[in-house]
Image 1: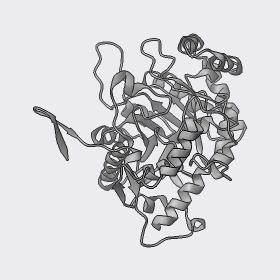
Image 2: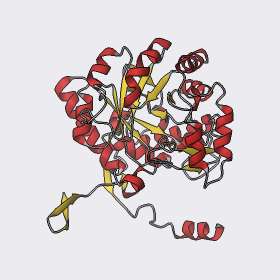
Image 3: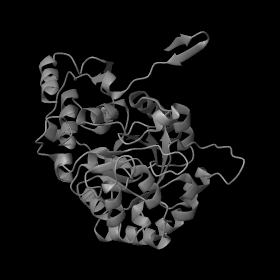
Image 4: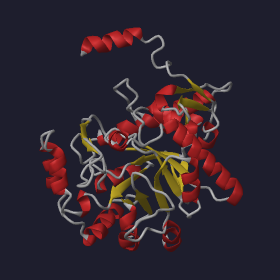
Length: 385
């Protein structure tokens, strides 16, 4: 439904995580009977969690730990790990920078060129530690580093930018032919980001194995403020999931939808999957893990841009292990720990034994449900400030 917003302009109403709620089912099942597994390409993951390709989140050790726990982590091939032989020092420099200087410091740190030998070295390190090697680049560098990553043994290749489409016009340079690239690559290619039905459908038609959904919802991303673009995640995911289902019915090929960003709690993750996501990608949530290389800080991938920085450094703290974030036990009551446990419990409440069944649960518009009956909680929070 569209609404008039002035004279001859109409706008469609869209929804974010805080505006909807999941309706319990008529049948409930014990969480121990629930299967949280999901697929990306031909690979099955025990839990539908992906750690973002952000320098403060993923490194070889973190990626190995994430793989061992049943999820996936992605390494930024244009990040600090492939610019410096020892990533520790530049990471410390970013962490110690003052708030008014951190963007400039990042621009200086990321000015060092990527070393192709380090791309191969990092992938070998991940594999040696027993991790699944998923790597990410922007579209402009896919051709340059895709072959290197594949030959080094990468398992997944992500092509990521603020907005990615299958069609692009430019007065200079060569635009990446994603269809041709996917055809040439022998490993699954995941593409993003986008937020509309049509863009999702066209990217699926390129041969991509997964599509990343989300523009600007991340905790360290400022694209919505700087550029004014974006669609609230619930609406974006629902539209993308409809494109996936229509594409599958037409071709018989299933392309996974990955909700990327905007999820702070187990409840948000559950809503994203009910909206239609097959997997979820998280950044700030995993930056809190003791295994994360950011020392409790987190920053957006576009923050070091010399042309138009679109990110910020935020302090999230290193509060517990990756295992506790995913599987508990939780010692905080804010929904940021035991995320897999929250997912299993919610699936049980709606009577869903699989992710596909969970995607059929009912969502309702409920913008005030987070505040209903919570007066004492609000008073205690105000009193503790």
